Length: 88
Image 1 (cartoon, one colour):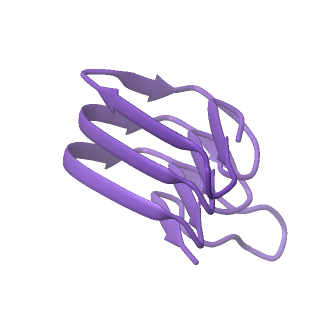
Image 2 (cartoon, rainbow, N blue to C red; image 1 turned 30 degrees about the vertical axis):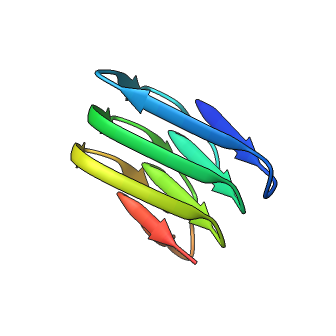
């Protein structure tokens, strides 16, 4: 999680009226691993990496309301998954 990383079932994040942009890595914008993430009125754009470059949600709870996910780039040699959103 280059921008924001939420890890563990006891972890939670609430975000509103924000921009997450220009981050690099796996789950570059927002990475949630088994936590609870609630996002509203937010732009997730211009992030790059291998997988889930906008938002990577791995076995967590993800609540989105009025969220724009655009212009995120996923992949290297061999490709990548979930340029905007990867939910596993």
